[in-house]
Length: 111
Length: 114
Image (cartoon, rainbow over all chains, first blue to last red; front, side):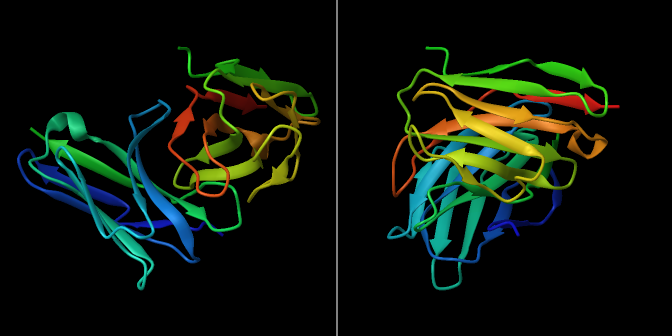
């Protein structure tokens, strides 16, 4: 079964609002990554957070990681219509050597 | 830099036909991956290669074979295509052994098996 599971499956907000997506995983990890996918395109890397980090920022993105709860959240602040996309978390489980993705959250930002 | 190049972009196969999806990266990455993406299922790992000369099964390997031809190239073969293999296939690569870095993706292959 998939290592990462995002929540919610779909999220619809107005431009200017904040969007929060959550990811839960099952085993110990080296790091956790978030990706974005526009419809019909390949995935684009957004941010990587290591297992010894608790929070990381990149522009309007804020990622938190709680290894005790095996969960992460991605916050997009002041969202824009151009943020409309699907967002995936990916985990790099220790001793596995691969990246496992969740099912994603489909974000719709309405102008 | 081209990044990750995947071919073909589109393919229609008849049930039972075979084909090979090609993937090449020019970033000197150790790790390469093949995923399939189906509606509502996210990306599922088919096979991966942590280094040249090694390949391992992922979550959904049945019906597929792979070859890590050299450090640059990682191909995915469908020996006898089935309608259940209709999907979008993505190749990706990343640096690192142990802790993996950012993965770079190809643009995908949209495969339909009729």
